[in-house]
Image (cartoon, rainbow, N blue to C red; front, side, top):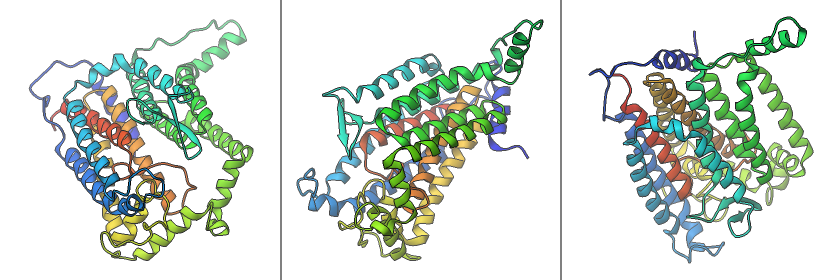
Length: 411
């Protein structure tokens, strides 16, 4: 049975052919299930953020909240409103115009990612410099992920119009060149160059989590775009080997893996997050302690309002509540892929695949870290974790999916 990405590829190729505008094209109507799921997750995320953040904000250990218990909630609620407005505005934009802006967005993202190293522009937090001060504090890597999706989708949508390279067959070098062309080697060079540049920039920032996300969404869009599966086998082996080399060659990664394997060896320091997260999940049981009644958020669990907010969800809502939250995420992701399958053209289909895959990976990776299935990576939970700029970018991406859904063929 063909997998989802194969269906996306086949339907997008058929949809890529020019079609006359007819009454069978739905104009002006966004996909209601996707919109409702997005808004519901934002609302639930705000409620859980309020519950998870008020002890940290009230005691103000980091001296940023002034003792205002609602500090994080008020700021996140404001950004949520702004994000929903941005989502609405983006949903009104004709996404076709983004084709011509793909390279510009990608270049701008790379420049912003490099700018974090400039004195007076970059912000250092937690020992890493990954943020820019202006216009608000934000991570340029978020723009980089979006730029990567746009560039890959734009280029792959024109794949059928690419002119194959031809070499002379009367000598071995020419025959070898023709072989490389047949297996798609030369076609992959621009994509490999772009992802190599972005990974190199992220390596300067020591931003492993963003690097992994870049590779995942690049692979998803390339696969949906029709690149041969053999290249993913070769590329996966290469990425795996490189990851092992990085882990063994850097002290901080080696230490992180050791702490992940047995966080109880240093439960008061390096293993504190994992240990307290597992205690929170375990104490929640099946039905939880009740909304607002969690204990680990009272200065036991580090970053309860950020990367480890799902542990608070498990403690207060229990296994049942946590599964319901994951079900909402799953429904949104499935609906996103459904919209990709039914997109009007290949460009729209691939954009949705890239954004939805990024969203799905962030949810999976965050939950895996909270449950200690993965080492601590710093990947936040979409719509739940505190972070205004990230929330606005996420909602803008949802708005782009809604924009594409406006032009989906009527079912």
